[in-house]
Length: 100
Image (tube, rainbow, N blue to C red):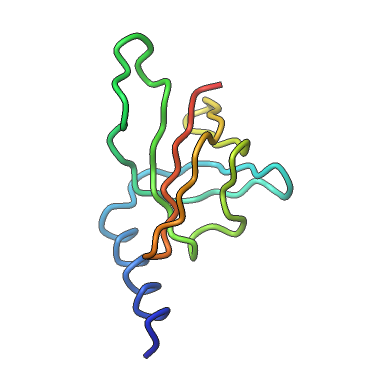
């Protein structure tokens, strides 16, 4: 088994254990898709506008089009704009969004 296979297995295991949030990812180019993500605690305080940011991780194997800055993510009919994407060595994307 190759390292890439091990990482895919790890991604799927993390999603099965921690993936509890379903979002709609609308890339700037391409069709919207439903994705299951691992929510993360906000990296910045939201004392003035709670809910203004959304932070999550998604495995590359769990999303058809890689997230990029400017994409839209929808949660409970609320739209967020992707502000930052970090591709981690584990094959996960760490994504930060701000409410539109």
